[in-house]
Image 1: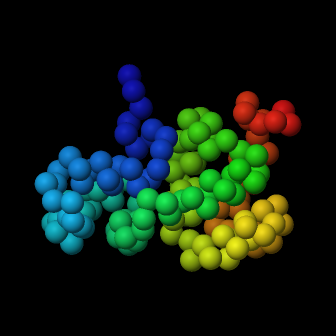
Image 2: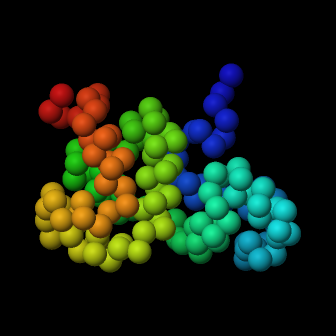
Length: 142
């Protein structure tokens, strides 16, 4: 038996895109074109609030790229984490996509990725620290 769609690894934005592709003929369809109950159903399926869903729908597909860069700096394999901890990975992606400190994060990653200052503002610091402490198969130092 396969895992429910919401527990499979991948980008949080992928289910939104799939939903639109399977239910819409027009490429420019947005949440405003849907009924309140349809929007609520999508939010429930993705386990996000309505406000988060609207913000995620407005973000581009690269909105969680900074997470990939941060995980690479920590020597974490995104695919391995997504495969073994899909719920945690989806939450990491959601928080990164909704983060208001994206510009600072991008600057810090470009300058000195391992500078611990990112821990002062990153909404994912607790989860990333916990994930970082685990022994991952893909990690070079294990």
